[in-house]
Amino acid sequence: MRVLVTGGAGYIGSHTLVELLGQGHQACVVDSFLNGSPRALDRVRELTNGGLEVHEGDVRDTAFLTRVAIAFRPEAVIHFAGLKAVGDSGARPVEYYDVNVGGTLSLLRAMEASDCGRIIFSSSATVYGEPVYLPYDEAHPLKPTSVYGQTKLMAEILLTDWAKARPEASVMLLRYFNPVGAHASGRIGEDPRGVPDNLMPFLAQVATGQRDRLRVFGNDYPTPDGTGIRDYIHVVDLARAHVAALGRAEAVTGAEVYNIGTGRGYSVMEMLAAFSRAVGRDLPHEIMPRRQGDIAEMQADCAKAAGVLGWRAQYDIDDMAGSLWGWQSANPTGYDG
Ligand code: NAD
Ligand code: WQD
Image (cartoon, rainbow, N blue to C red; front, top):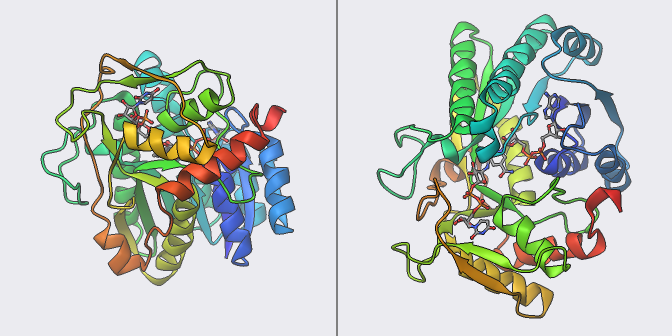
C-alpha cells in the first residue's frame, strides 16, 4: 500500500517504516523534525533499501499537507506526529491541543482532499487513567489524568466521528502501552532531547555515564517489590502491530480500538535488573519519593489484537533490554554522534 506516515522520523515512526518497507509497502514521510532526526530516515533507507519520500513540514499546515497528500495519493495514513511529554503537556496545554488535536483535524482535511479513507492512529494507554480494574481491556472507562491524555482521547473521538460520517472510512486506534527497546541492528532507536522522562531511556544514559544513577520513583506501591509496574512492549513488536492494523483497515470499515502491549507487567526493579544483565554490570540507583501522577500498576489485555488483528508481541524483557543497549552503546549521543 501507499502509506503516508506523519512523524516518521521519530522513535516509533522510524521502526514502523522499517517494517512497512520490509513488507513491500511504499511510504511518504511528513515530519517537522521537532523531535525527530533526518538521520533516522537515512538509517531507515540504509536498513531497507526502500524508496522513501520525505517532506519536512508541520501537520498543522493543512495547505502543505494537502499538497503532499494529493501528489502521493496515499491508500492509508499512519499518524504518529504529536507531542508526548505528560509533564510538559500540563505546562503548555495550548501547544498540546493545537498539535495533537489540531494536527489530527488538519490531517483529516488533507485525507479528504486526497480521497484517502484509512488511518492508523497512535493513541496511548494513558487514555484509561486510574485503573478501575486490571488488565485494562478496550472497554475500560476512559478518564485521562493529564492534558496529554486528554488530547489523545479527543483525537480518538474526532477520528471515531469521522468514521461514522464516512461509510467507506477505516480508523484503527492503537493504544500503546510502554514502548521500549530498539531495532536489532542498533542503527535506529529512541533519541530523547534533554533529560529523558521515561525509565528506559534514562537508564540507558546511566549505563553510558551521562547520568549518575537511576532515581526509582517510589518503592512503597502495593506491588510485590514496591515499585511501579508497567506493560513494556518492544518497539519492533509495536511497529509490526501497525502493519497488522493496515491489513485490517484494508479489510473493514468503521473505527476500531486495540490495546497494544504484551499483557505482562514488570516493575522498575525488574527492568533495572534486565538492563543490568544486558549491560553486564549493576547500575547505580537510588530510591526516591513517588513521582506525582504515577499509578502503581498497569497492564494491557491484548486478547482483541491477538484475536482480530492476529498480532501478538514476540519479544521478551531481555530482548527489550538487549536491543536498547545495542542502540545506546553504539550511539551514546543518539543521532547527533
Ligand atoms: P517522537 O517524538 O519520537 O516522534 C514524533 C515525531 O513527530 C517526531 O519525529 C517529531 O519531529 C514529529 N512531530 C512533532 N510535532 C509535529 C508536527 N506538528 N508536525 C509534523 N511532525 C511533528 O514520539 P514517539 O515516541 O515516536 O511517539 C509517536 C506517537 O506515539 C506520538 O503521537 C505519541 O504521542 C504516541 N505514543 C507514544 C508513546 C511512547 O511512550 N513513546 C506511548 C503512547 C503513544
Ligand atoms: C515507568 C515507570 C515510573 C523514570 C509515560 C506516559 C505514557 C506513555 C509512556 C505516551 C514508572 C518509573 C520512571 C525514572 C522511575 N507515553 N520511573 N525513574 O509514566 O508509565 O508512561 O510514558 O503516551 O502516557 O505517561 O512511563 O517510563 O515514565 O515510567 O522510577 O527516572 O518507571 O515511576 O513506575 P509511564 P515512564
